[in-house]
Length: 360
Image (cartoon, rainbow, N blue to C red; front, side, top):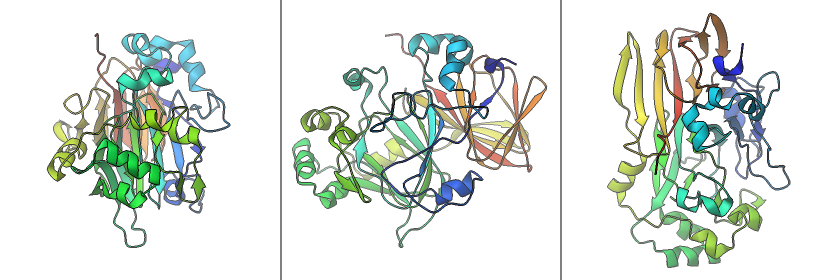
């Protein structure tokens, strides 16, 4: 069967990051037991891979269980995989990607470029992202949390001063701290300062970019190079990529903490919307509760699917495919009717959709 007419399931794709975790990520994905270390992030569905010092441009692009590169799959049939409009908008690349990380420490404070700044890196997209909190654990008595958005007292000049002096305490205090629990969805618009706190497995749905601006030189026993911090920009230019909008407590929660809404029922199964164009034009996210089966509505484009609770059996054109909890799957644009069945009677999954295409 052609790649574009079946769900495409991807193999392990673990990468090294500056934070520490991975033990719970392995358990969640049904992998061999491991201790927490810097091998703590899994690229689940990606056509661009990851930016890492000393690694080639196509580093960590997703590969199928038989070793076929996603880049090659798209090259063979770009419209069948991506959809015609998405191929025209973002040639030969997915417009929505998925990764998962597991951390027992705070991640580095950072932001990602907005679309208007993507040209600086020869890219088409900025990087808005959203985290579905798949699992949590309490570390050293600290409740699982994330940090997002500037508090009202922060100004560009003050942020620059703290970054130059590496006043980490002041920088962290300048961001809102949001406690999270399993099942929460946090949206981070492009440009917003943020960091995942300790104790989270976060499933990240994001735009087609891996550009990150980091503002800490030393974190979790790792020294970051200038290129790792500012991606080829100097500090002055890098700090301009932050969105210096400030928020009070109510505003940051309205912007970042997503509520599930607009339920669509199929028997005991339900599809709810966590993110759509009312929140961001970058991508969408739906939460699927499968009891015991759910038929996915058609969509004129590609989508990414990740089970977060329980394994799934995917049925398409008389064929069955097993998709394990915590693993990534691409649903091509040309895919026919797809039925999801919970292997043990009930399951939950996250569905990521590319944003609506602007014709500006």
